[in-house]
Length: 153
Image (tube, rainbow, N blue to C red; front, side, top):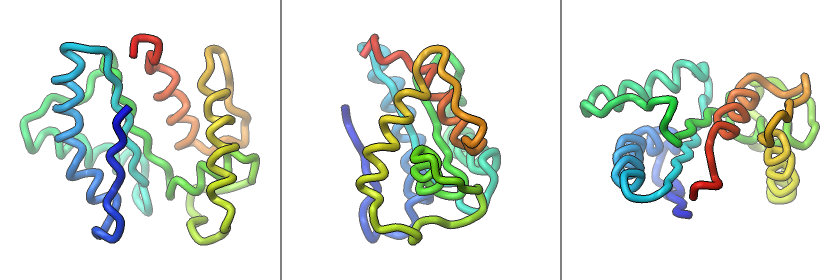
């Protein structure tokens, strides 16, 4: 597993992800030709819609004459609306909406990430269904992650 975290204090995180996106898609395709590989990209929608953020990523691919992501590729593009903290709270059974910025609403994020990751794991299992309280962008994330085949890796 290789993590490519956004450099701290280097400006806009979402802009950095958009700039790295094409590089990582090309790297995935090179590696995938020789070994089982998956790519998971996470970028906040912020005040855009999820579709608008995804369109930006597609535009970055087009601008570099890179093929769009195909459904048969092991690439999941996850776009929390408004930010990932919304998902973390939702995964911990906290009632949230996708317009409020929850980033500075808590101090126990590390604990919430641990328990939320367990919930996300269970929601992505075969035949699992997120509850009706799951926000739409997280529901889309669950669908994207569930189609990845980690057994091949």
